[in-house]
Image 1: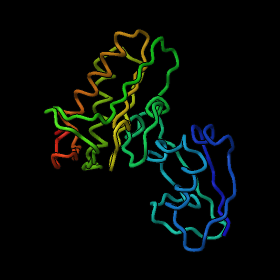
Image 2: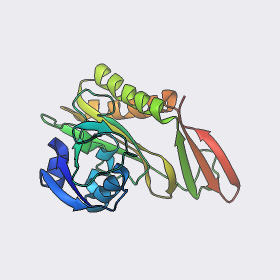
Image 3: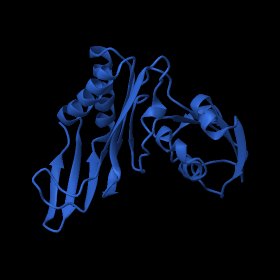
Image 4: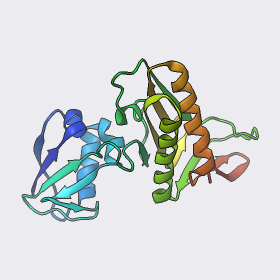
Length: 221
């Protein structure tokens, strides 16, 4: 069956078009369309975790089944909305993922911190893989809180954070923070504040797996 996809704002810029019609199997869901988009437009991966989806002008979940000839609108978050500067994803994070979520207009400094999976734990144990788990609805709100606090307390223009969930291997990005400001000092300080605050209040846990066994470690809260 044929399905028409409608793109707006940052989604339209990422795809390079306002709409397109694709073929989907009978019984396919919105989730299948999102998977198709990730394959065709990898840069949309992070944004897809924050946007809302409407089918024939009604908001729907990922489980909603498509109908022949339906229109699926991908609606990115508006400025100030929950999740617009914070995201959780089960897919690999690119080094520019957080920067794509914020405005850098007027900035003199844009810094990005990427936390990657390292081969040793804080205790010096060898680590081969990590698995991240979160109380997702609360974690997303708390990530947004971290960003909002940094923006309120610092002289910065904007900030954003993306945190990975699921199974990660050595070298993969676990968390990415980008801060835009007029001057570099404020940007570096705000990025450190967001990471430190994350570890205090965000309910995310990681399971470290290595030759010595498995250990759960709290990332926050």
